[in-house]
Length: 294
Image (cartoon, rainbow, N blue to C red; front, side, top):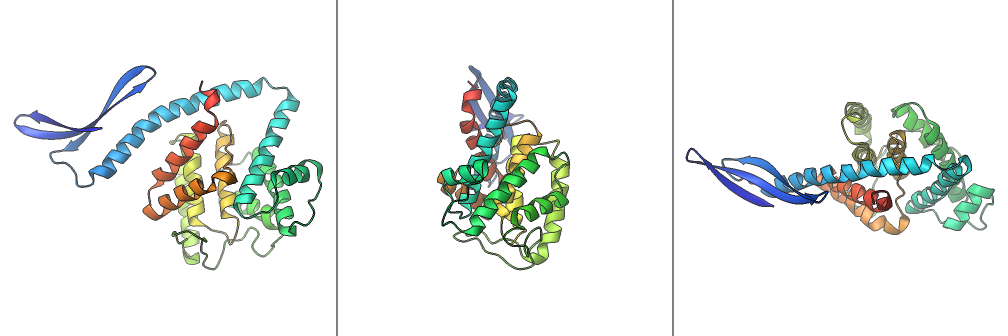
């Protein structure tokens, strides 16, 4: 990326220019900076390259949707059900494991497929895993759009068998995230922040690309941190609700990759730059479904 000077009628005008290859063709993008180089030029460069990257990324993601949908449509009913069941097991295992569950992938599969309760594992881990399956399947069938009522209902289903006091209730106390420099909002702020969140969602759901929207919904909701527990699980469910609702394959964030995931979230939250987490999630999505681009 270069800063270019152009002289017009004796005045110097500054531009950013960046060339890149896409579909075997070289493209040139340009952005006007003004009569002087802005003091926040590094931030402008980052936003400029992000906008260019998104053009390329979203083209590939749309190809993923097209090819995935075509392949999935060719499956017999039993194969479709098996695909969803396999995703459910892996997604439930990983999202619960990220939040401290002790169940292994094999134990999660046996519990959710065959109803076999693992021995010597905490009651809470077992019941939350079973409840997550219920919420996930309800999410897939949901015809209503995202709303506070829907979110509270899912949270209640997730926790009513282990902690009825917090199930479906907005917290009324401060919380902290272990190991993170980010401090969640105070309880007194939550009603306002949730109202603004759903206003933002309704204003942007038709404007933003669904994968970007899913990433932003995830980030913004977990940043508000409205519940005493389960904020991460709910945000990952909301992410997949947006993807599935718009016909895109869902995304599983693996426990083994949690460090990069946590880091992207924390950097976005502390720097107040949404694009950090959005970029992380889009790159992960492209890597996960790269075979559908080729």
